[in-house]
Image 1 (cartoon, rainbow, N blue to C red):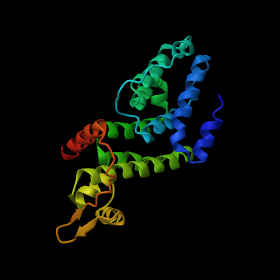
Image 2: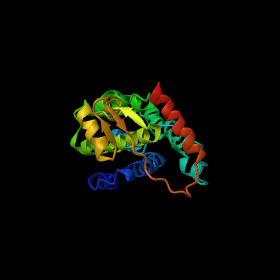
Image 3: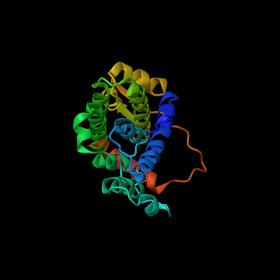
Image 4: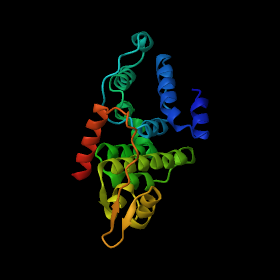
Amino acid sequence: MDLAAVHAALAGKSYSAVAPLCDDLFLQAASRGAATDDWPYAVHLLAHLYLNDLYAAICSPLPSDFWTRASGINGVCVFWVYGCLCVSRNSARFLWKSTPQEAKDARPELAAVWKIGQCLWNRDYAGVYTAAQGFEWSPEIADFVAAFLESYRKRIFQLLTSAYSTISVAYVAHFMGMNEEDATNYAMQNGWSLDAAAKMLTVVKPKVKTNQKLDASKLQRLTECVFHLEH
């Protein structure tokens, strides 16, 4: 199986391209009946976590040639492909469910990636950092995990910025996977101000264009995220 394009994307740190590359190559291999025993499931799964492809969203229409391309593919692969297409932001969970049990049992690194996925799914914010930093990753994937953490931390910080006007240093440290000093420095580098006596941070909201329209789906998603932050 030729994974040169995937290796090139990893080497070039083009991490956003890895998931679609893996998806297409996996479908091609399955359509030819090729063995997938050596498939890089850990990289594939992490690629979807990197894109935040974990939560169900609106169904996407099937491509017109889907069933033609899927003919001859074993049932597990059809389940994975159909799931990825119909629940377009649930790809990571569908990939995990369709991964052979033998691979799950024999590959500790794959299980470690899924541990990150479980923490994301359960909104265990601190657990994401613990899972990512508590495993000795192979050279092939170590930089990818570091890039995932950086991207995840930025997403969490954006969420906190949207959800709060003031927030405790301890709270920020918890959600950012940092100690309080590092969390404070990170926040202040992004323009927040500190009340050292109260150990509270004042959030600086990003400027919003006056002609920007409110996206109802984004508002709903933000509301759900804030609810989980508070509970």
